[in-house]
Length: 318
Image (tube, rainbow, N blue to C red; front, side):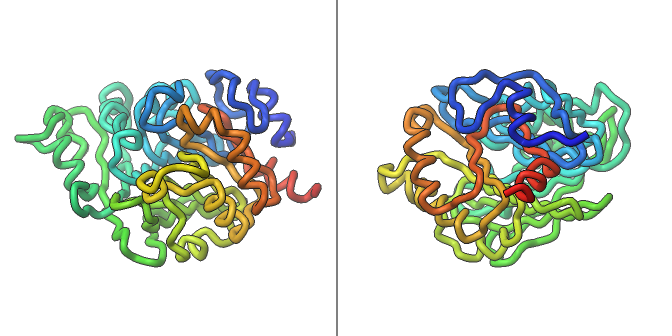
């Protein structure tokens, strides 16, 4: 049974570019190949949303998770996702609003039977920010980790399932393959987020291509090549057009996001990572994006979902 994207959004109580609907505890109607936002907010509580996180459903299962910011643990459960099904977890960077709930999710291994390895990828380190390997050591080192009692994740002992860890060089101008299995191939590539080592992820399948960008200021043209051919593009809308210089060093303005989307030209654009001020200026910011990108734009909310089948059908009807 086919559903249009608008029908699926309405079915969950969501509307295009709406900022006042409430999150609904709901598993997507279509889980064949769907991106679901778990957290659509930022690092400040004034957005009244969970922080960053996206789950990608594949063949009826919650296979991929990108980021695990504060509140994603709760939204993961509300979405019907299961850690038993998860095959890959991609960390974009080590700001707290993208990784805080990771230890809590991994602890879940105590409570179900899983022996297969969960692949985790994240950036190499620089400056004040660790590599994925060093972050995991700080959390789970047997002797000095903050959660030393969860050290069993390294080898699948003590009732936990094992993980593998891959540090991705965020300086590279081309994508690094981080996962390939069951018809999905995932690449990671560095993007400019001020002085923070940060990755974007590209998910490829025979059903379509999704590109999930974390925070970035939009100044690296190699991202355009990385995201070329995307059917669904997820971009952060963290600041407004008149943001100060420091904010613009960390994040892209609406016009910058619009120009990126214009060049990549996906079949659909999802905006997330909203903060309180950004929500007040949401309509104004979306209008700026529309000056450049002429395709459908969706203002993301916690637990909203975007099935590739509906995106493709909508594109064919245009």
